[in-house]
Image 1: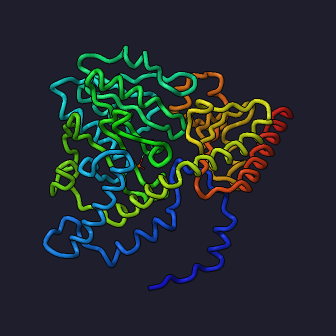
Image 2: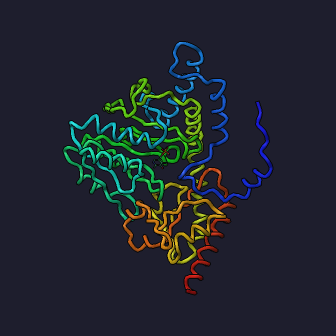
Image 3: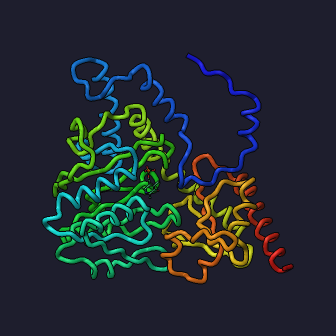
Length: 401
Ligand SMILES: *Cc1c(COP(=O)(O)O)cnc(C)c1O
């Protein structure tokens, strides 16, 4: 088995591509993860549910191995891991699954304005079925107010869903405190940990988490695989399945398991945990290198809490430039996401930035830099230089007209 060498013009195209700083959107598969996955496409290809021959057994053994890795990573047990196609599906299963299983107990759900659409939209959908949804605001730094959370809890509240780490501004919500409040009031606590797994410690016992959504492709695993942690001990979460079929995953999620992606997910989590402390330190240094240079300009604002955030996240708002023009100026050099307030197009600012409630800042252009495993200090210098040059040039043009 061998691979054809890529065409040289292909390699050239690759080499002149912009610096990738959109690691909150997705990440490339780590080559160690890919190496672990490859045998499971052709050699060990069996269906993990086939229990009458060796092809099935070896695939099942690989799935079991990942289940154990994931469970150990979050201090759960392997039977509490339900594989899904990603965090979107895990969020849907958690929220709709709990709503359907507990509607006789109550029909009120609490979530937060800065959640991912994969949490907000299922809640919106439940509203059309008659559930009541409370959407908590956040403070200027992106964190929820715990007193406010306690105040909106009602006797009929069945679920609180608050993300662990935000995908736009990187802020880390006070998960332990939220878990404590929910456990005390006997309400289920779900957290979307798509951006948090492998990056911050997540112990479902210590944090009193009942359901937790995970995904592989934000931590150098493949796209299309994720998991939902569903508590079975010390309180057994009831969940109505949202996809029916062969009864896989203890009936909670039917469908043939995607063995190669699952094997890669396990490897990705193993690597992220082994390197967590050193990698966070390295990412923090890269972020400080970038911010240290860009923040020398006047009129640059950091979005989200300054320290209680993911090491690789830098989200800024820039005064006095057009969002679309800034995005265009950065494009050749750096791949980033803009949560822009655009004046020349009618792009609305992101719901996350809007929720921070800084109305003045909403008129500014904004950029999310998501720094990841394969970024280097040299790249931070290149990106900072381009950002500064673009901002200065746009501001100069603005004063000329
Ligand atoms: C990426 C992301 C999701 C969606 O995950 P998929 O695996 O792509 O479906 C959900 N929530 C958050 C916070 C994310 O960052």
